[in-house]
Length: 328
Image 1 (cartoon, rainbow, N blue to C red):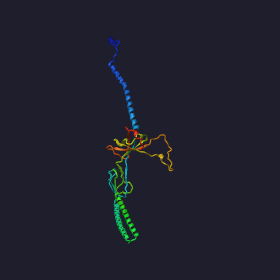
Image 2: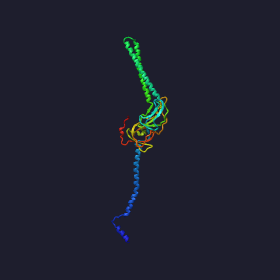
Image 3: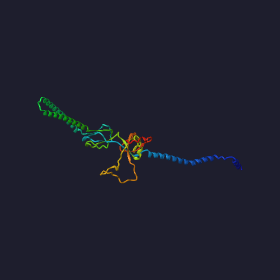
Image 4: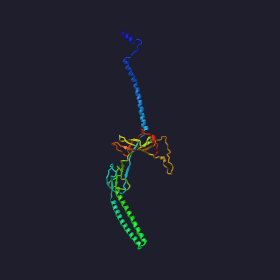
């Protein structure tokens, strides 16, 4: 009875029921429990949109390709004189500086040729001097009518021929000295000896490659981009190159874009007519165009090797495409 009276006094008319503290805590916990899945779903959707947009820009708006190759100029050293190799100063994969001696061809025959050319020049000079004296003497005698004019002309022509022979002998001497200098083959660039097959006592033939050098100052990257991505690539755009065997990025910039690739249908037949492939597929693959990347910075520990595989990203953020409409 006392309990019922207390309840009646608490629930007197005109008074609003006040929830107990435990009921308030249970209500807030229930609301949070029901709101957490909604918040998680919304956060997941937002992250998916942001991530999807970033991936879209990375794959569609930012030009990139995995079809990249490290390139370098290779200088082939072919002797300009023939003979046996008596000295080989380098080894395979050795770095050499410009002007370093690479190999020596037996100079004996060419030293003898220089001596012979020297002797021939001296003889031609003496003959020319003698002919000049004889012509001068005949010219003096002709003034007093002691010799006929025909004799004067004959000796004058002989003196002129003597001077020509001196010039010819001097040219032969220069050629002999040049050939002697060519027995020493020196490096024209800074670079690495590669695929060295020449050995001492091998016979070197004129025009046959004996030593190949990879020019250390000529490395670049050829990136083959699909033609659909060329519209957003411009000269001087920054580029990052990811080599297949290294983690650090190689930095560079777009140096140039190729203006031509091979077109099979442009070739002529034997009759001079266009040779057109009769097969035309519905699926058209985008052509790949070479883009030359100049190497600006190579990280410490990264070794560039001609032929390495690379992934190239072109950084076009902030570029004004309206300033690159020139067709030069």
